[in-house]
Amino acid sequence: MPALDDISSASEGSGTQRSAPFAAFGRRIGRTATVAVITGGLILLAVFWMKVIVPYTPVSTIPCPFETVTGYDCPGCGLQSSLMNLAQLRFKYVFMSNLLSPILLPLFYIIVVSWTADTLFGVTVWRFQMPKPIIIAGIVLLILYGIARNIPALGVW
Image (cartoon, rainbow, N blue to C red):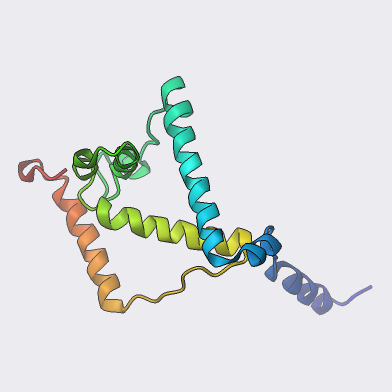
């Protein structure tokens, strides 16, 4: 019978190194094609959402958990509507849904594509580090926007 130390060290080593399911495909097509495949998948998912899910079900948007619990809009409220308006090329309504969408949507795209490429394809697409002052400024901006959009007198979307 193995000792307790042998069992714990065996279980630690087995769960830490998981291979990406499509790593061979990712190595074969390269970084640029991986981004193109993921972007195409995201576009197909958006078209499926707008053409199949929204018209034929009562679900048009996913409810915001923060707004559901507190009754207040979060800084991200309206991003889904903003993305749907962007897909339909209605640029005026993109900004009306959420003023920070020109910053948050590209950032969300970069995060989703780089995570998906690394997790599914084993390809590192973008690896960058933000300086701390920029991260702090972004957090402060999100907090201030979240507060400002819940003050009716300001009229912030």
